[in-house]
Length: 285
Ligand code: GLU
Image 1 (cartoon, rainbow, N blue to C red):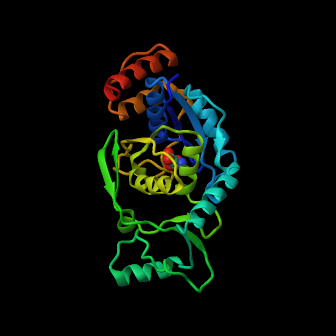
Image 2 (cartoon, helix red, strand yellow):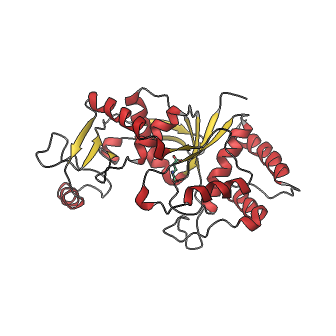
Image 3 (cartoon, helix red, strand yellow):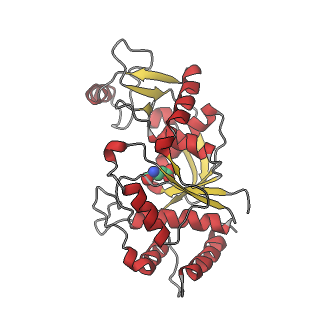
């Protein structure tokens, strides 16, 4: 075993689909190609969006594809205390502030300042007298750069492109950015392989890692799987659930979506052996 630790981190908001399988497969093959450890983490931090039983079902489906966590599965719903500690740490360093803005006040300010819809205008940065709804991270204008193993050099001025982002939401739940950063560090993740839809979140995560004194893992963003209408597969675009009666077909489809040519395999073991070899030839040399 090498020092490599990778992970697949599904949110249990719906059944796994072809796009999820691509990310799971890519992260698994990358870990195997590095002779590393591969773990599954269930990102269940948004209960209103999680139909009961989804996480259990996702784990069963992954198992049918031969994808089993090398370590005990971590559930983010069990990690509130760790998020609270990280949050307090940031707060102590004055990197967190309370925000009383509603969606509407943010929209009005964006319009007034000519800012795009995804940029927080900094309204509460200097303090607010209104009741606090959410808690935001105070960003800085230093550009954050990293080299993605798939998409190359990336650079983002988080303050300009996103603004101060939410760490604790108005409904009291933790934001994905904080939970993911705390758990990647806690689990000693050295290599993150995740969907390209999350590419523009990574600079925010690196900003948080730096503020919390955590190491930054290496990143590989997997090309998105699109449906016939050119939309990203997701629950919103009604992506069909993976068909566990046709594991071979689904795996082959994911393999081709990752940009590889099909090959014959007589068993799941054979498939993973050959796929790992081909993945290593392409991405490790
Ligand atoms: N939980 C996220 C999702 O299912 C993935 C997070 C990550 O890989 O960093 O989209």
